[in-house]
Image (cartoon, rainbow, N blue to C red):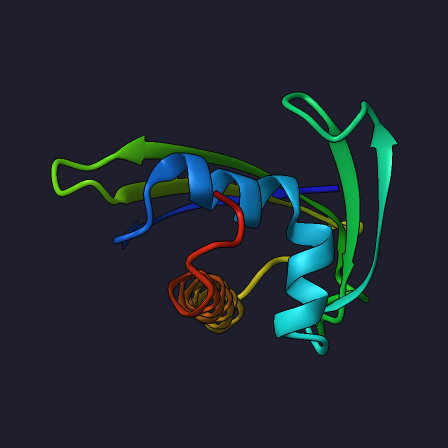
Length: 131
């Protein structure tokens, strides 16, 4: 099994605490609501849903025959304008000696960016949620 790692960074007008509640803590409920094609299922593996909880989210992804698992580390940092800077590290654990091609990485980054934008748009349209 090989491991392929890439990093992404996004900015948002949404403050970190609100973004954390929606995009991290409640992603298993929110993502299927705003992008049902993106998630097949979700379950808590360890923890109670707070910091340190391990969730298993099964994505509807064309790479499922090549990827054993994906782990994400996401950091939300307050920006000077009151919004957030989101820094994410993705670790793709491949099956066997499969290599991830650059076009798959690019497509993955585009999907992540689109999903993030959907969450941000939802929060902007629903200012009283995840406060």
